[in-house]
Each structure stands twice: as structure tokens, then as C-alpha cells.
Image (cartoon, rainbow, N blue to C red; front, top):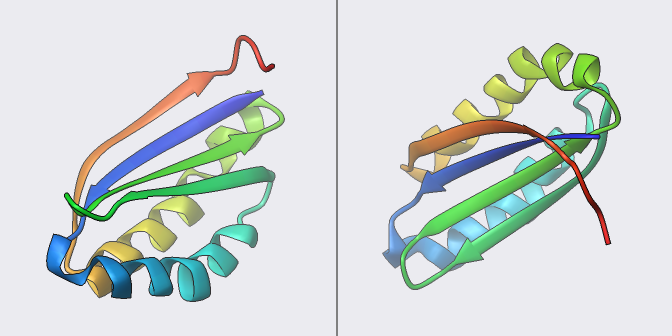
Length: 96
């Protein structure tokens, strides 16, 4: 299994709106990413930080999703007035 962890910083003042838009608008778009097994959207409302963890069954699926994930991420960042802090990819080495 492989994971992509995207960290974005949205304005803390709009945390409630960001939460709603992420759940209602961008999570469904993420579901359409080919090869996606699951995704977790995490938010620290006090700082505006949002972390999205997406999981893929294989490295090939992770790599094949890069462009479509980038389009969804850029749409979310633009809509939320956010900035991308980091995008990292990992191999999942244990799950409990």
C-alpha cells in the first residue's frame, strides 16, 4: 500500500466553510481518482491546517493518480484561498 499526504493551509477564519466545502465538494471529486483505496481529510480549525491522506493499493496506482490528484488539490486550494504546504508520498509499512 502507498500513501500521499497533502498538507494545505487555509485561512483559519474560514475553517467552517473549508470543512463544508472539503466534505461536500472535494471529497466526492477525490473519490473519482483512479486507483484510490481510501482517503482521510483532517482539519485543525484553529490554525486552518488541512491534511489529506490518500491510500492506494500499489505504487503504480499512486504514481498514476498524480495528475488527477493535482487537479483536485489545485481546485480545492483555489476555492479555499489556501496554500500548499507540502505533498509527500510514502510506502505504508505497517497498518494496525
